[in-house]
Length: 294
Ligand code: CAA
Ligand code: NAD
Image (cartoon, rainbow, N blue to C red):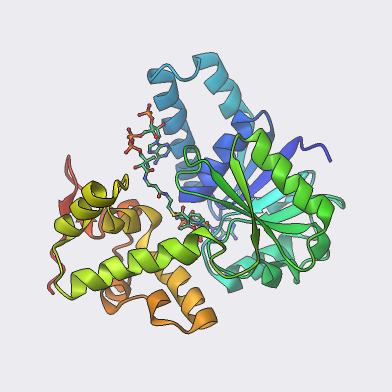
């Protein structure tokens, strides 16, 4: 099936990036957020990344304008009606996602495909509340979506071969490395990466090293681009706690459980880089390790 128009629901860390790369691929994009302020914020993030691409000589100014011109920000679900594919990237909360699909599924035209970018929730739980579980799949992008090469395409027991093929084609058009993943909580990457980040928090709680030492060690000792606590801040501590809760609930193994420090940070509103404070404070020129009082 030819894709001409893509809907992206949620314009946060992931949604704005997914909307941008879809528009860069030449597709018209409708980006839905909950209120005008959030729509403006999402579009401003895209503008910032496009300006950066132009400044660095990676994109012509006219091409950036064309990309921007293909993106329509809205709070109106009705604008998704003629999309060929709708990808949700809203908060990692099953209740919110089900509520959203119950509104969106009847609006979007017959024959269109629906996808979730969930990090951890079983895709089938969302597929099952729509009228088209055969046309529902997981499209799991990585943060930042503009840069990270991987796309996990997730097939549920109901996902048709046609829908799976669309997932692979989307990945190909976007220039991603596509990996076929089964609908198992965390898929491939988060099954391995989430326990690693959570264990880094436990190592910090146990006094193995300071925040900076743990990060510096994994950068220099394992050649990771970011240390695990910087990465946790980058993913969003609220999202990480939600992912941990889903994975622990599924597997009942300690390695997936969010440690107390992380849960308390989220309770305090420390969501990581997106809120300006997490394991580091991002208010100055350079991130400074936070005082967590352990
Ligand atoms: N948004 C968009 N593009 C960005 C970006 C952002 N937040 N940050 C960096 N970039 C792009 C820019 O294009 C930049 O190029 P220019 O400088 O020419 O503009 C390019 O990336 C390189 O950026 P930097 O030189 O500033 O920084 P870097 O070389 O350290 O790379 C990084 C930044 C790509 C984020 C790198 O640090 C990295 O790979 N970190 C690990 C990211 C990671 O592991 N992501 C997966 C998280 S888990 C997940 O996503 C799954 C889940 O479900 C939770
Ligand atoms: P985020 O908190 O940055 O953004 C979520 C956005 O969804 C918010 O802006 C919120 O206003 C919006 N939203 C909530 N309900 C909505 C609705 N009904 N309609 C439109 N917008 C709505 O979260 P995020 O990091 O972008 O995560 C989004 C999804 O992507 C989650 O399922 C998450 O697990 C997944 N994911 C996150 C990462 C990551 O590294 N952060 C990576 C891959 C996948």
